[in-house]
Image 1 (spheres, rainbow over the protein chains, first blue to last red):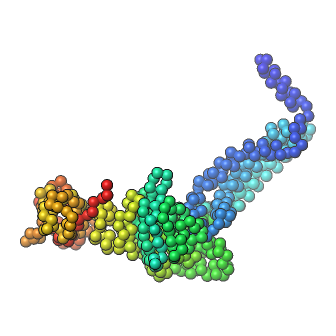
Image 2: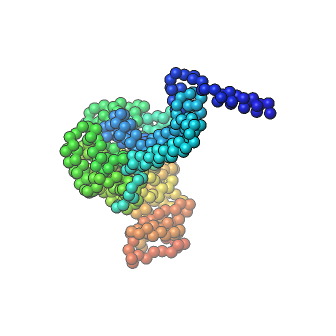
Image 3: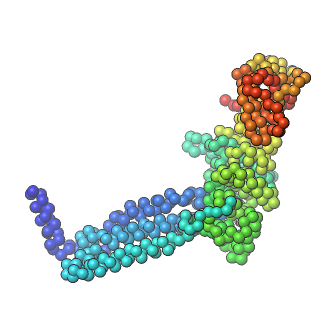
Length: 160
Length: 356
């Protein structure tokens, strides 16, 4: 029970004061977001790389005279662009909803802004939430649009 | 001087020997097949010619230039892969023109060459299709066109037909051979399918356990196999361990049967044991009056294979295959019937023993 009260006082003392500005730049917050979202980005890109035979495609490009720069930009990146975009979207969604880093480090972010506005105006956060839904849907549509013509999309094989 | 010279090439992966003492000269315009079971080193050798692997020992010379350490993108080589390896994000035209675009050829020239290549592979009008919109056979033809669009001096094909069904394999291999002959391009073709190798090659290199077993024309490889492995691997074979009864007469014994060979038994003595082989199509059921090279046994099984009928004859401990052409009026013996089979002396091949 004593521990519980200590926790309550700790939280109260943390949030009861203006946030402690630990750093004059947002770089630590960005670094925190990178660490937080890295597994999601990694899994997306990894799944994309596994879906195509990167080794054979690279060798095919090499045998056609391509250099490494061309292979990376025109063969590898273009074939995993949907996976990269999915990772980007996941990262964006996570960062948009992230509260702890921004709150602790005292830098403005969407979630902290919602919280701050909500304490003063009850209806504005609802509007902002709807806006965030809109942004999310727009992102999904953008990914669909950018991923058009990707392997597996469109018509099925025909002929012999 | 040969167009491609592979000199004393060996490749080791750690302690594993992938290729050992590989020597081969390929003449300009020749199609040479590497034939062998999985893991025999044929693809590794091809990859060393392509530049994807560096030999542990030896040299790869193309058109008089030592290419042993030249990167793959600087070799005059086009390659076709088993898994097609078409770029999924590009159209057929984009795939075929990829190498030309890298070489910074003018747009008009690329378009012209793409059209020529599509005509060559009998796929005009497919420029704007994506690989996933094509069948396996079409994809491999596009991969071939892509490799040829750069006008390489050497074409390398790594089991290009393995992923296709039997009928398309037969038609596409004929197409590949026709294109190769039309362009006169020096080609190395890797396959584990002996029928494929025999049907399209000028010469066949049979490999086993990282080494070359035999190099020869398809006719030589099939009819005069030099080793037991080649005889067993290429075509169906009746192989048996026989004892030499008379070196001068070429008389051999096994399972109480006697057979003569026309091969010289130089270096052998009476009583030595040797491996002999007879192709099933060179054996026949005995017609009356035949006395020489007659083997006695019983019919074990009869299998209908379409154009031929394969009869299994039990000769003591051994079972021999006898192939006979099918015809609607063929009278076949019954399973369990006693029978006699025969062949000419020339059909009895003496095989070299495998090195220990």
